[in-house]
Amino acid sequence: MIPAAFEYARASSVAEASELLRRYGEEAKILAGGHSLIPLMRLRLAQPRALVDINPVSELDYIVVEDGKLRVGAMSRHVEIQRSPLVRENLPLLAEIADEVGDNQVRNMGTIGGVMAHADSAGDYPTLAVMLDAELVTNRRRLPARDFFQDLFTTPLEPDEVLCEVVFPVARGAHRYIKFRRRLFDWAIVAAGAQQMADGTWRIGLTNCGPTAVRCTAVEQALAQGATPEQAAEHASDGLEPSGDLRASPEYKKHLARVLTRRAIQQAQATA
Image 1 (cartoon, helix red, strand yellow):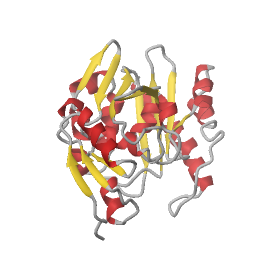
Image 2 (cartoon, helix red, strand yellow):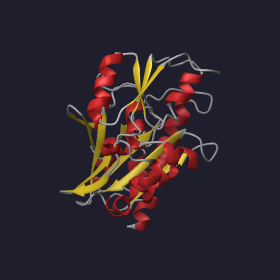
Image 3 (cartoon, helix red, strand yellow):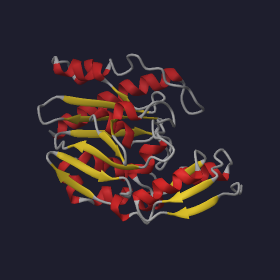
Image 4 (cartoon, helix red, strand yellow):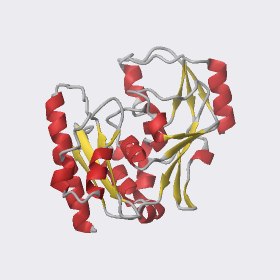
């Protein structure tokens, strides 16, 4: 299908992007990689009045490590994250997740900021952000990931607010992220992540098991108390209320949550 008519503007800075968004109002959308927005526009599920293209905003394209934090600019492409020596050294799980995102075209054009702002519960980066208590920084404020992802496709971003960077803690320990999907480049039906932190504790997260990414604190607590991966993973479905779809019923997603969590912990421990 053909998208509905819209106006188009290119921004050269964060300040200009915010001003353009303010000028066009609530019906404007930011265009970064476009791999989520453009398909919705073609189906006319999204009909923005205007697109504000932030691809020229080079100030949002960076990856740096400072004070035990990995700072990733919102316009960092998946392929840049995947190949970055800084990411591979300081948060290798993020590089491995980037390698799992879509196909080569998506990885070369898609951005971490676009995935975060889209807030799809099937997205992989939000799970890591929630697992690790990452911060999402806009041109106005800093938000912990647990507050940023409010519901499916829902964040607290204001109409003229621009997501600028994602700040992760450095985590070099044992890790694993497992996606269960029908085909190689599909979204995850369910995915599970495990990351061992510097103090020896574990962070566990689930993808596509609810309206937002899920941090499995019950599993983390069980591991801290000496439970085996098998025992701890039984808590992965505690409190889950996943929605069913053509690929999996709610009960099957709960089953996958337990199985994939167990496998992620076991495989991470095997590399420790």
